Amino acid sequence: MANYPMNNNNNQAKDTMNSDKRRSLITYNHITYLLYVVSYFTAGLLWIVPIVMNYAKRHDADGSWLATHFDWQIKTFWYSIVWFVLGIVIIAFALGGFGVSMLADSSNNMAIGSVLLAGVGLLIMLFTFIWHLYRIIRGWIALTDNRPVP
Image (cartoon, rainbow, N blue to C red; front, side, top):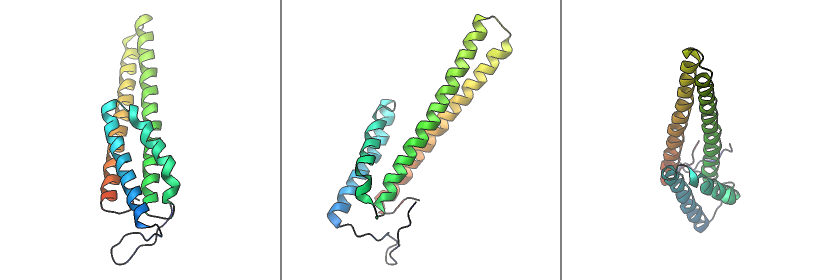
């Protein structure tokens, strides 16, 4: 991540961006953070909208503290997708094993293992959800305070 020189007067990163452009990008970031929150109520269907928006305007913020917000949201999106998909794959694998154990009328050990594995997948998805929500809240608070995110 790029380092942005800090202004001694108010601990905000210096940049050469004009104030209208800065205000516009701040508003834009507020909208993308809001869309991530709204996406929770659409089962994640809106996740694609803010990520496309972030990529579309990312380079407009180059050299400013606002660039950290674009990078933060993009990284949050991709890490969340990877971990969420991993959780789904584990659950699908576990349910497949559970189904096979029921059809094959095999021992209960395989069925128990499948249920436990599905639980691991659910925990991964739960922790991913909590982590994603934490990152959105932390980033949004920093944006509201006109601060970069780490």
